[in-house]
Image (cartoon, rainbow, N blue to C red; front, side, top):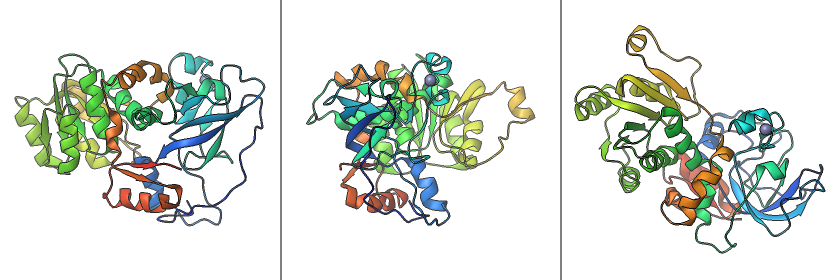
Length: 339
Ligand SMILES: [Zn+2]
């Protein structure tokens, strides 16, 4: 990405093993993230492009000498930060704060939107997938690198469980994933706030019991009408804007919890005296996808959930710029990249 609206496909040198803990992965599936749309809207024009992509799965081609648990030919999933899976934060399930980890596509590292990537800390980062290259499950498995784990993280940090009532703010791929995750955790009622009918229809398939297309104060009134005037126990904020947070504060029940997983596009949170008096908790943050993969994997392998339904367009590498455009124009919900 060279700047707002400027994504180019270029040839770069093939990745090579640099550290004994590295692996080289040939990418089979990748995708464009909703969070990639923030720089796509606002990145200042630059002379040198930034590599892109932090969600991918593929086949191990080569391993460094310290990588004993993986070998060439393994089909693996890469979660959206790399991590050693052994430090004190990883052991607490917070791989996004790994002492020896980091982000894809930074500091010269490859991104997932490409043909191949060097994976640092490969043994801690990569998760072997027990399927073949031609598996029909690859699309749903790819969601474990970020989008479905992010929805799950939102529901988990909000404390969603059996009998919970839940409001999900946002009908993007993360919001719909949060609906699916909340129902998987036993939520009794899930109110989806979104105004794109094709998306909220998928939300209903994922288990939303109610859809509220109104926004702002009108939306808050609708959620309160649906819940005896009180709001829901939990609100899953999957957008990242201040208006979305305002709706969340308006829709949460006294004693309730708001979890944010939309990357916040604002520096301050308006939690004042009324929220204090109502004992509102604000939680959430970037999802440590690596911590959830083993738990969520069987539900996909055994067909109980199909989170890959959020992908509604597939492009090859040459069409990635148009994939960004389609997502930015709300023409596509989430774009799968098949190099
Ligand atoms: Zn770690």
